[in-house]
Amino acid sequence: MASLSGLYSSSPSLKPSKNLSFKALPPAQSRDSFSFPHTSKPTINLPLTLSSARSLARDISHSDAKKKELVKDPDALWKRYLDWFYQQKDLGLYLDVSRVGFTDEFVAEMEPRFQAAFKAMEDLEKGSIANPDEGRMVGHYWLRDSTLAPKPTLKTLIENTLNSICAFSDDIISGKIKPPTSPEGRFTQILSVGIGGSALGPQFVAEALAPDNPPLKIRFIDNTDPAGIDHQVAQLGAELATTLVIVISKSGGTPETRNGLLEVQKAFRDAGLNFSKQGVAITQENSLLDNTARIEGWLARFPMYDWVGGRTSIMSAVGLLPAALQGINIREMLTGAKIMDEATRTTSIKNNPAALLAMCWYWASDGVGSKDMVVLPYKDSLLLFSRYLQQLVMESLGKEFDLDGNTVNQGLTVYGNKGSTDQHAYIQQLREGVPNFFATFIEVLRDRPPGHDWELEPGVTCGDYLFGMLQGTRSALYANGRESISVTIEEVTPRSVGALIALYERAVGLYASIVNINAYHQPGVEAGKKAAAEVLALQKRVLSVLNEATCKDPVEPLTLEEIADRCHAPEEIEMIYKIIAHMSANDRVLIAEGNCGSPRSIKVYLGECNVDDLYA
Ligand SMILES: O=P(O)(O)OC[C@H]1O[C@H](O)[C@H](O)[C@@H](O)[C@@H]1O
Image (tube, rainbow, N blue to C red; front, side):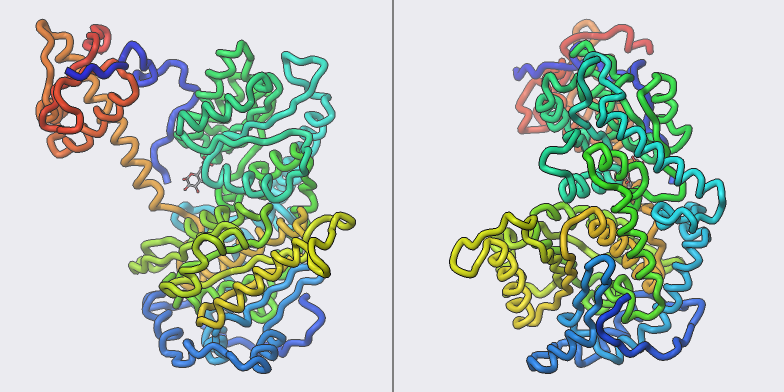
């Protein structure tokens, strides 16, 4: 007999807890410098009638026999570089698309689609219902220029929220607002609890912009992995008493975030601390999280808005509050984004960096995501950019249906870490293996702050090596027919990071328009959430069945088939086996006779009978 312990008695969390603070919601649903010829007056074909994005994409890209013939002649390549070189002087941002092989014919063919996309974007910014499935406006551009908001009330809301974020973070940093058990001290740590768009933006910004010694250091709980949560809490140690816990969830009902909150609240209780005096909520008004925070009297609450999507929420309180608390200049981030927004409103493809990106993505991936986008920032602090872009791009573009209901299975896969590190990992395959990608190099001109550089060999600095690795990889890939885009910024600053975010947000929006999909919903995410909820519901039924059999005299051990039958779920026998194996591995009060590695041999009952549950 294998005695596998731990269930009702030791796992109260499996029973409906009266302590739950909130429950999962049901699934709801200038360019300057060079003079470029301006394109001729566009032909506008509206509405964009795509028989399907997929077939038209093939028409445009595959029909172009020149596609594989990348320009190799150095003079012609230099000319192409100059012809297509984009710079935004105020931002110190440059874009080079010369190593993508699109032709003039392709650009001309794309022109009407882009004009339609620019018009759709203009409407979106004016407050149209750009997310039709969910009946929502899409307003993340208003966050950095509140004068664009379609209603005065929204403008006021945006401005007031920004002011309150700045005031609150000033008060925390200065020690005006103190931790409750440390009247002489001040908050030293932030524990951010959130997932998806409520984590990726703050994580990217922290990694990119937090100073070496920030006023508050930040940690993240972005999963329902108990060991991961324990690790974060353990790392905080005694500093839990001076930790500001920011719980971020637009919907206010995401299970992983709720679990993170409950775990952190337990850690506070165990440490004899009053969570509510250290808790901050960022969520939509009247969400379960908002109500919990209000009722429990948390330290502060900041709003999220219906018209800002999770993956574009980085310039809302979601991204700004944690950033401000780390001493990052959030107004500069907003300024960078605002300048980029202005630059990407231009209706000339060649003068619009977001349109250039979207056009290259379309060319390189045949408009159907046939190639992956490998994002390689050559700067450690931008490590999380590709991870951030993964959600922004893949959750926006990965769609089964287009706006006309056609099945299109669109998407664009994003991955990457950083150069030159990745050169020693997978660049081998990029250079010589399956050519199923295009690269995006993110280059930062400034190696390190002024006055700190030195030559580690005559005439060469450490940063020169990084530069050389980037340029070498770009050349080596191109020589082997691998296309790449290069985005260059002068320095990693709040302004340039804000600009990068805005650049990609706009590129995604334009690309979605040209392939005729809704970039602002995520219907596919619900399927996994629903299935997870069903697994947990089945687990409760399994426990109930086992409890009933355990309460018999004598105890009636059950086979997996018997459990499945009594759960009225014979088709779920595999899942029932997995549930039992998982509980067994976690010291639940579960007794399994037989060999757990041989499912047919197992007979299961509980270590104790819970009469209360029997009649519940
Ligand atoms: O901010 P929340 O409502 O907790 O949502 C967190 C995440 O949940 C889902 O997975 C959505 O697909 C994401 O877009 C969202 O960012």
